[in-house]
Each structure stands twice: as structure tokens, then as C-alpha cells.
Image 1 (cartoon, rainbow, N blue to C red):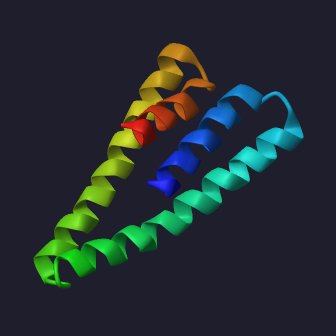
Image 2: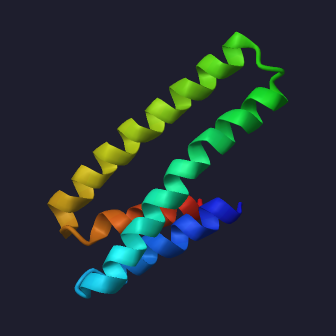
Image 3: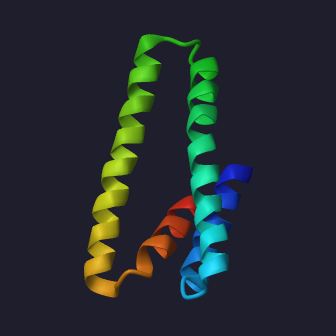
Length: 97
């Protein structure tokens, strides 16, 4: 939950502060650091909950891939309709969800 909350904060900060180079850079670094470190943590948690059964790992990996596909597709759609500032807000909304 803390990782999602931090990701939400960094995404919203990037959307708001994109015109200011230093704060935008800090927000972007935060997005990368939080997002990258959450993946192994989620994999470990799922493996422990599912007793590391192959089907659990396969389904979890499939959902990660589905998230990448949906995030990229939705991000592209909102860029086309609302501009480049919208994808971070979309990401913040998905993190809140």
C-alpha cells in the first residue's frame, strides 16, 4: 500500500510540476524507483501466498503483462485526446484504484 501511495504522489507531482525541470526530475526518479522496486516485492508476496505453485506464478506474470498492455494503450488514448500531461494523471488514478 505504501508503494502505491508513493507512486500516486510521484505521478501527480510529475503531472503538476512537469514545467519545472528539477521537481519534475525528482518526481520522475521517484516514479522509477518506486515502480521498479514494487515488482519484485509483489512477485515475492504472490509466490508466498500461492506456495510458489507454477500456475500462481504464471497467472501473476500474465496480469503484469496485461497491466503493461492496458497502461500503454490507455496512455496512448489519453495522449491523443488530452495531451502529454494526461498519462501521469491516468497512472495516479490507477494507483489510487
